[in-house]
Image 1 (spheres, helix red, strand yellow):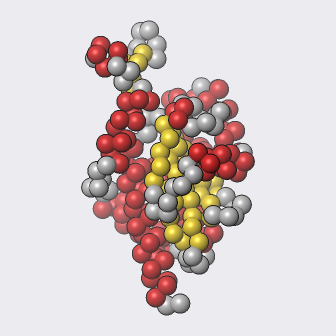
Image 2: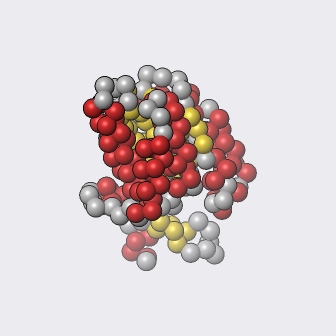
Image 3: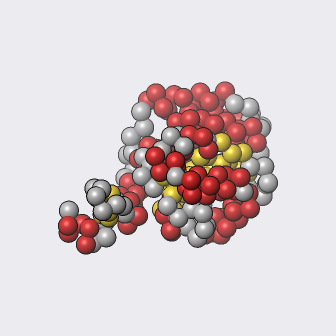
Length: 206
């Protein structure tokens, strides 16, 4: 434990408390997860995502709302969806974060609520940081890897995916640094796959 702490992978939040992983430790863990093509997603979760997306209309904006709602429910994190070259953002999940102990501190509540309320203005900065991200890609920023002032102790997951009418959608998941990365990466991959299938199915009848 001492070696891990000296190497920067563990830290003490409080003198009397135990050690917790640092952003460096989470980055190592996430990089290993992202290199694993076989992240497990429970069948029940796959079915919920499939039904939500399959039952949704083919309208890109409506489809984005469905994606945000189902992922927010399954992840208990903030989810914001948008269509490329559009200002139609859909935001949900703020109240879910308040179940986490770290978001019961006044400063953290204020910061995360500010991000939620003004996300549209911050989105261009997030996209600039992730310039070059391809459709069907997943990018993860942990802690101060993000240059956004109010997101220094959280994690941002940015996902790109295809939408009908040859449009590209984006989904941003914001949650605590100690989020369930395997679960959320699995959700993102499942969403991408289901949307690819829906777009392909729609194209066959165009």
